[in-house]
Image (cartoon, rainbow, N blue to C red):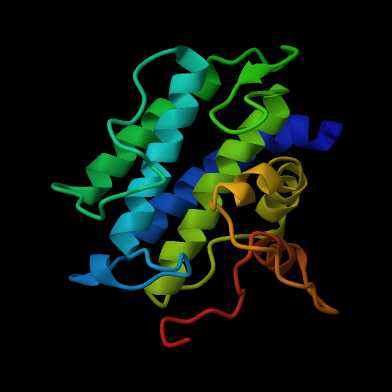
Amino acid sequence: MSDSIIISGWDVLDASHEALRQAVSGVPAGGWSLPTPCEGWSVAHVLQHAAGDQLGFASALTGEPGPSFNPFEPTGELGGDAAAFLEDALRRSAAAWAGVDRQAAEVATPVPPHKMAPASGVAACALDAGVHAWDIAMACGGPSPLTPEMARPMLEVARRIVEPLRAWGAYAPALESQPGDDDVITLLRYLGRDPHWTPAA
């Protein structure tokens, strides 16, 4: 990946984590059952999946235990304080990445190809948090938490890792780009998301 991403990757991870925190803080009372752009998944499902993926990255980096559930088959039953559940996952993810040697040849990741340059790995982790922040924000009628600065490194790493994940059903087929698409919309379409999705769609 480009040097600019090596410099900015950890900043993008921080921004994505904060976006996910803010999206969860914006879930209204009774909002955990709202539908999301992830077909068949409620806000609770998406949060559980997003937290599980952050735990998966932390586990791959540190060897510590990962999530106690399959992030790709979330139950949607949070069973406690959602913000605290998320915060534990984000804390563990951030701590794991803080311990990474940024000049290392590669680090372990829970997604194919399971070994990446640090800059690619941290962008992949940020991609997961940022896009699911978008899913939750859209479900709750909030503004998009994604910015072009976040979307650019995410899109670059997405083009490296998403195709194998589509085969697992983790991402819908890419949507065709349209004239005038900005970086955020390009990223969303590539991930199979309608950038104009609304709960009533």
